[in-house]
Length: 107
Image (cartoon, rainbow, N blue to C red; front, side, top):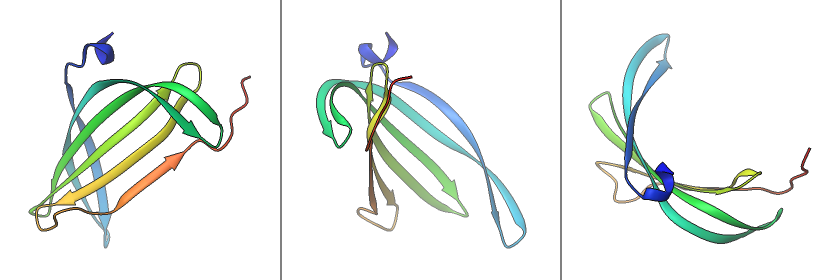
């Protein structure tokens, strides 16, 4: 119901980053909202899925980093496709990653 409303839901994810033997704990701010439904075609089949848009922002060692995540969730299956694009204060657009469901067996 919350996803269907399209209203943003916010939360904080606590992340521990370890580099060179030193650990740093940061809080990532996450905003998620439903973006309707779409038909999505992936190698595992065609699904009528709920679209969820998330924005994650975190400040690490003085740099602001953000990620935009779009996930397609199919009923009875779960995530069938996900796209991630990242951006930093010094970059206009970063790396884009895509994951798709290749096969699925109910059981």
